[in-house]
Picture 1: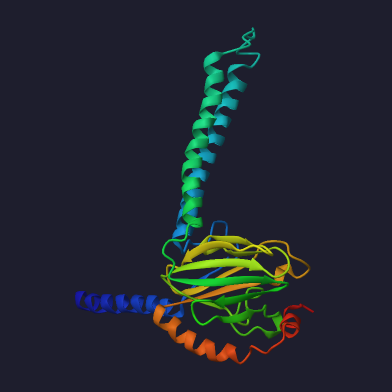
Picture 2: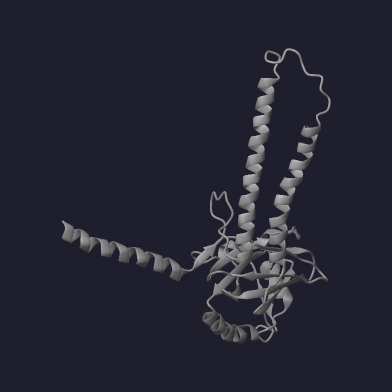
Length: 283
């Protein structure tokens, strides 16, 4: 029996590592899931800070709700007609008034410090290794890589009838934006027409693309995988058909993709915008 057990355990361990290795090989997928009730898993330093701040705020809110509920229950019981037949005529209580003014100030300070720290961290681009320019259009995205020979292409929504096996509905595009994982990427965002919003929940990136203005943020993707988001600013009749798909690759694979992409998209430079726009209009 022991001999069989010692034979079986290594086989199970090897099988587990094989499953995990297979999952990692397929790549991480960051998107909302059916019946999901919490934030997506944070996959960038900014997202981790936002996630931790959200947990802190939730704890403070729960504590406040429990405290207020306890006071209400106490008041209902302690000052009922049965327990308190002769009501107090007190109109002012200095200590109580100081407390209900000072305690909220302390709570706001406790919230403000990590909030401002997170806001500054997400806004400040630390030692950017490359730049990605994002341009919003009605109703598709345009991406350019100014550090890599001004590589540029459009990313257009793929309608349901053109989806392939395994491609998520309303999140699939013809050309995902490809970025290297574990790299500080500066993001410059603007728009050619109206205000859009480039939002990737798992990376804590959510910034307006405004005509005539360039907004800046940054992202550091923790691991290779597929990261999905959508336009989060009402921008017209096809607002719901502006998905975002980031394909994060290891740095070596990203370099190989750049060589291929420069050849692929250079042949499409003469393609007219009305043709691209027609692909984005949902029938």
